[in-house]
Image 1 (cartoon, rainbow, N blue to C red):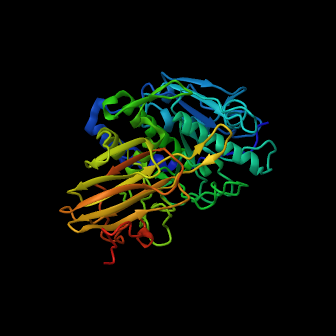
Image 2 (cartoon, rainbow, N blue to C red):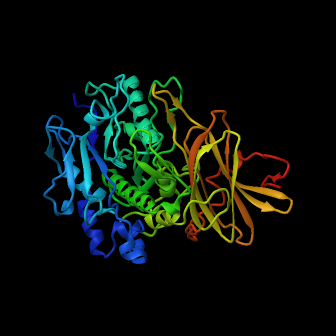
Image 3 (tube, helix red, strand yellow):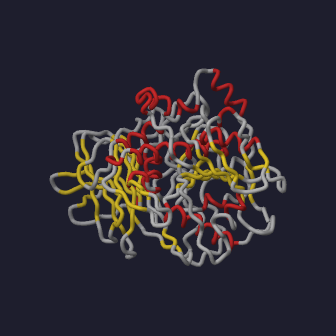
Length: 494
């Protein structure tokens, strides 16, 4: 029975038209126009990346979750209904335009799209929630979810055990298959439960206006106490006016980055064959790295022509435990920066360049990995790793930390840290460094769970703060949580 999911309303068409008339578009604001101007025909466009669009029924019982394939935006694309029966909806059509449309998306080269109704996908057509079967797998690389609600079998009845099982399965396919899922948080004023925004491994999307819902709900009966309330969400925002549309724009960016990373294996130090899907994946196209690259490349300072700007990123009261802003996450999507993070190539521990990433497939729980740089005034960095879900749907979460130190002749000075114990990203954003000094990003673990993989991405040229904004000199005020690690670590107060 289809029930539980709510399609997020569509009310921003007039705003889009007005903004375009001013000569500004959301594609300008998220760095796409700049990337096209720089790369020309070499700009990645998602070609060869199969994707999934999962949609809720607009009107329950009518099965209206499919995009209108006669729309010119979808010319040349194969859009397949994986749930039946089906009919078209305006919501699915507009979401599709932002995800893979020929003019409205960031990945117009996408040609293969599979479309599911949300309950079917969470139920016996993919995740197999509340069964003894493992989730199915797909060779699709990116999925979009522009709807909210929870998976249950009785409309209006919240069933925590079934919801937790669905979340475990959702995180399972991202972890095991590197199947990148991008999800909406609730819209402004919403009062529904956005189930997938409570996941760990997805990329959650909000609004540059800062008005979308923030933080995980965590109203689950979780015996492991991992899917708790108050974890950071959203991860990133876009200037579109509704999360229904903000979300597929990020999914489109993810597809662009996957195509670029996959077609340029020299950017990765190695590849591997995914056990369930059989796909050969470069390190740069893993779910960990793509998520880290999108977040580290995001803009904390914006100058939008299309819609609202970020206001006082990271001000007191808007800070999360893992170095983000409760309203904006890591900031506004900027595909120019994220592209250059991937384009700079994998750089292992040691000296790093202005942009770059690293993927460690098996970090030990005692390892300390140092990434050193100089000649820069700032740093935006994201460390991302997946919660692990085993075949019995038990969850385990490693506890990474990310520190920034200034290296001195006498040792080092602690500058900033992100040390959340409930999230699976750590983030540092600092401006005002001395370019003559040498700094070190340090990745550590504080658990005994054995080998774990992580993705680290950085941008050492973040936009400077405007004069009117409060200076951001540490990772979202986390300096109060810093501890001396060894006798050579000099606390900042000294």
